[in-house]
Length: 121
Image (cartoon, rainbow, N blue to C red):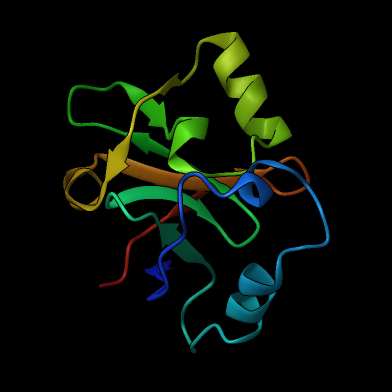
């Protein structure tokens, strides 16, 4: 995975609803460079939000598993909601520094499940 160059706005109401208004995400997905399976989006506050078709889960050095809060600007996602409801993950803003120092990163959605990922910088 890599970081998409365009920032999203955390207060954009379209990000929190599954709609067909996802041109940025569809365009980014269509333009994935060779060797990159997913783009991650970052908001105006430098918080990681989500991928083009995935939510992100980060295992910190202390073993806690986190996922960004909805206030960062992202689609809730069924898999994400399941992980939150079960207590497997907690909502915490995720920064690029957290990704760089993470013990593990995974991306997922209800169709694909959770898949280990690596940040390519």
